[in-house]
Amino acid sequence: MRTLEQSDPEVSGIVNAEKKRQIETLEIIASENYASNAVLEATGSVFTNKYAEGYPGKRYYAGNAFADQVEELAVSRAKELFGAEHANVQPTSGAEANFAAYAGFCEPGDVIAGLELSQGGHLTHGSPVNFSGRLYDFAAYAVDRETEMIDMDSVSRLVSDRRPKIIVAGATAYPRIVDFAAFAEIAHKNDALLLVDMSHFAGLVAGGVYPSPIAHADIVTSTTHKTLRGPRGAMILCKGNLAEVVDKAVFPGTQGGPHMHSIAAKAVAFGEALKPEFRIYSQKVVDNAQVLAESLQSGGIRLVSGGTDTHLILIDCTSLGITGRKAQNALEGSGIIANRNTIPYDERSPFVTSGLRIGTPALTSRGMGSDEMRKLASWIVQVLGDPDGEGVREGVRNEVAEFAQAWPVPGGE
Ligand code: DSN
Image 1: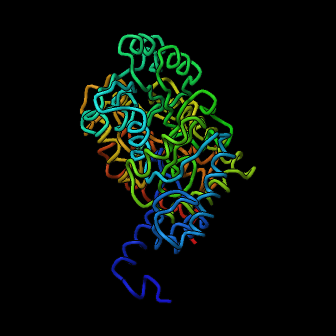
Image 2: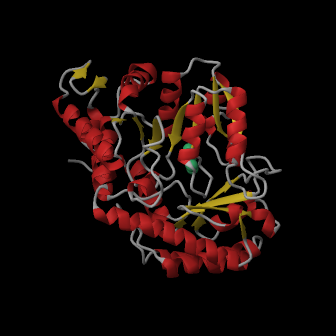
Image 3: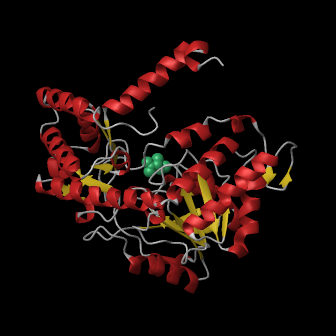
């Protein structure tokens, strides 16, 4: 068999450069992680070649005996992992999963409630530049100005005023635990469905270190590649009585042929997350985030909401007199990869921002612990304290490059 290197040295060279980048830098983007070799192998498997529109036992193409087996395995593992009544593992991304969930239960123009993007929500939770905000009438809730945590009283007032069909809970830049029971009470009192988008914290739920939304939510959407450490992709979990609507909304409602190679890799990732080691990993992700948060605060950096309960930390760069964009660029120049993000009530545009979002899932997958988090915090404090200082950046970049190579990247063999 010809390898990629032999058949296409150009692409192979780019892949190898990316591999080297991943080894030599410190990845602290809260939504990224390193999948295992087994997940990567399944993603690159011959299931890439197979069309399988439909569901196990009800396909529109022949030759699907093994596609059926692998999808059934992924479904049963997802149900076991999260204690869900029904799982659909075909969504190809979090956006597709949310699209299918809205399409299944709403008509265009219907009201849906969600956390505003600039407050920590997601594009698909009603941003006007996204299909969600264009197709549906989104009512946005916000966090409290003082605590920077979701204000459940204002959610309750918004919902009784606007009467949404769905309330979306879950976020991409919210470092705290979401009160699913309170959301469910508000939703069900107002005849709305509760949809929890757990993409960011799915791995923490699987590992038992973040409350599970399953008992409270009617529908749960999630990506599979963040804290869960699986392949790129997503899933929808729901109550048994909603299964038929969800399945039809995914196929034929909003998607065509499922990506069977990703579904095979999801089965592998769910199998990994079912192992006891995954609980230890998830606990370490949260412990590391807390050590990192405390060390940054000791270095004079203000964190949105004063800390974290999760894998994610939101830095208020205004406390350093710089923008999120400047912070992101200065850190990248030092070998530390993060992303700029709006903070609640941000006065800057989403392109510039006043915040920086960081997280610990990827570094924890490399085996790092508290000592390494303290070291990382001291580098961040140094670089953000002098973001224009080429000498500081160069010094940190050299230290990071040497340090990072001592921590193997999973899946890098
Ligand atoms: N891009 C994802 C994140 O970073 O949270 C959300 O789509």
